[in-house]
Length: 610
Ligand code: AGP
Image 1: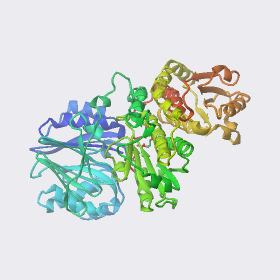
Image 2: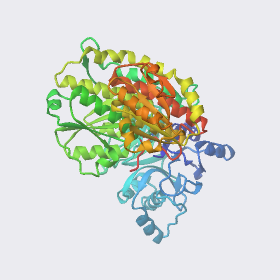
Image 3: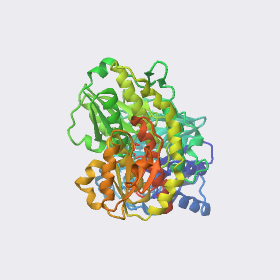
Image 4: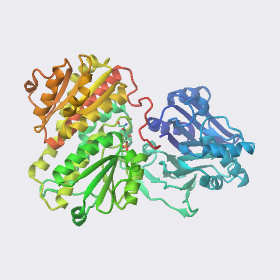
């Protein structure tokens, strides 16, 4: 979950590495550091806390070198203090390593190295990498890649690392990937590496992802990659069509605000070119599921975490109702530990914005081992989930930088809707005209929901001091209650729970009082009256009701204290609209409480440890 950047080439290395870290800070912000190599040796600068602290330090004590590595940390082993910040050096001071992941057997290696006289100055697992590689570097006569290749089989766990050494024969950065992402970017006479392609967009859009077990050596003249077996290999280059401008805030105070407002366009982009409104056909360029295969399916398993797991729940409704195929939704982190039933009659779909969430990737591996066919629903071309799958359904959200997922979620819903239509067609059933008609109007409906900003801000002002929130919804709107609660928790640190409205009376109703706001999705036709009755139960106990509805607000007279009216769209598409005011409310409460909404405490955008 840490961010890694490395560079070798003619540019000024420190500003370049800092610019790369800026794009990665969402991956962790406990500390930051940079190490460079120059003629006289290796130097580093590190600082506890956010990247700005490191930048301030560098302004006072500048660093310069020919090539280097930099890191932004999400602490796993060792407190988030400067002593434990990366780059970590070996005890002879000639190797610097940046690391994302965990070396599970670090204690055993540490003891062995200590017995040989190597010393340790940090509480991190990373330091064993620095010392072990240093030992082999000496024995390999200053060949860093050889030293890394020799050390790697001794490490257990999942990690991505980049290393530089004083005394290398040429300017070079050496990288290794085992389980956590590492992407390379090649330029003319210069090479880049990072843990996320977004970090490289300013310099290159041609990226290649390392495979597990790969060791790469980046020199000015080019990149050499060895696979786990020690063979020289090449990795395919993916061209990203992301615009570098998308990773700027574009006048917004936070990435999250910008990304919330990008949703009409992102959803439009996700539908674009995939639906033929005249013929009623849906097709994807990177995913084909043959009619015979779809006809044989006994069920679909949706594997995901967090917000993507909420999207999966909406997907279950969509696929079951539109395509009539049974769907199971699993927390990816639970799936592989529960002896799941999967075989060749199962389609397992990993839903992951980043495509790198380790829980999701591992659940997908488990499904594949049992014979299921794998598909990835992801936003990041070339990411791990996409590479391991037989087909990919891309969301076209563009890079999402805010840690709290917003446009990635709505585009996942859009993609799942398309998938449901596609599966229905592959089963031989026609698409009713209204199934497609609703799509054209959807971006406009989302834009209209965004216009609720002044109203949600007023609610944020009123309820910013609340200590708990309850979110209620029914049917396809229930996952939106879960998502609204997660958004609020993540960025405002207010406790919030999402619940199926009908379940409230089986327990949570005990919490209702005149202090706790209850946000209710009172939308749609099927469950509106039922939700209204549930809200009566809240009002009867003096609860405060904030209703999000596409109905005439008068219908909620007496049951809602505050009404947020959203445009009405087809019920299957309503979640894409009703989530918008919940995102705005969470954002505005977070901002009013002074929270760092783009980089909430303890979180990281891409969770690459189990
Ligand atoms: C969303 O706001 C979260 N920060 C988080 O729950 C996220 O959705 C989850 O970690 C899964 O990420 P992924 O979609 O990249 O796999």
